[in-house]
Image 1 (tube, helix red, strand yellow):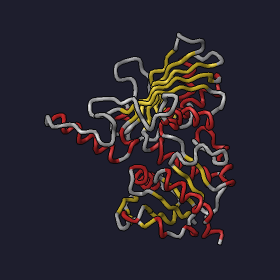
Image 2 (spheres, one colour):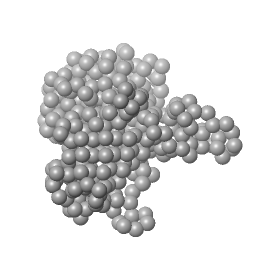
Image 3 (cartoon, rainbow, N blue to C red):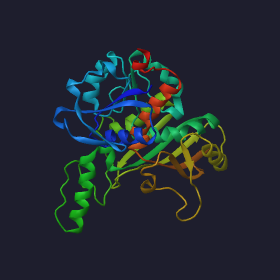
Image 4 (spheres, helix red, strand yellow):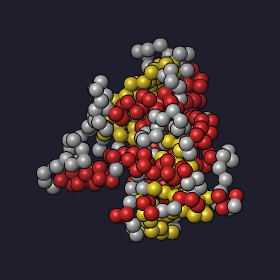
Length: 344
């Protein structure tokens, strides 16, 4: 007997990706329900070879749902996740709403799967920020080997991380440039076509943006609170795929060759690192892929026990939809949930 799964926010970029990945991975679901706000009721979305009609979140009865995959933003998650959990479903939320709550586990299955049992407290599991997810997948095996002291990361984040409107803006602005039309920023603070913007999310009092703060706090919660991290997060004119230039300082010696061997055998990682033109992965190549790709592994001679890496992943998949589904698979594999219909 399979599980009953609800996807909240099914019309968005991540929601559609969730439906696609559920079908791709043949997730053991007897029922998949696509939910969104009332204004989207009746809209059709794809689930493998099937088509689902959107149902209104506001009127849905969750008593028969086992797993709820949410990707509808923090405001919706704050209101609805506790209600859905109270109805007996395990909520896996993609928003930032619950990530920093000490009672809510923040999970990347390749990194801290053992923490998943903490879901019993509130019935909610948080998915990390897209830029954090791929980073910790690459850091975890190296941390286990040589203990990370400090990380300096600069991100190159695709516009899909800001939603469909952001993708539309990159397309329309690029078209306007070639047609010598006026380029008008709407979603972004400055033009994104043929430009980069060192600003993601709101500015905080210390001059960092909230996106940068998220990477610090989430890495500490998921991986190790002792790790020091500083980030500069940049939006780039790429549709899908986040890239990161990562500098790591370790407590213990580790060579680039050792790091390559460790990462080649690490879950979720693929190393493509040839010291030749094209011997690395770009965000374009990561789109539609599940792995976190690591390239340009080299010694950072400016610090003792230092390495530099290039880390790339599809932000809609590993950064959001895929990670959420892997969390659900982890719950099932560890026998932490039982399908309600089967139990009845």
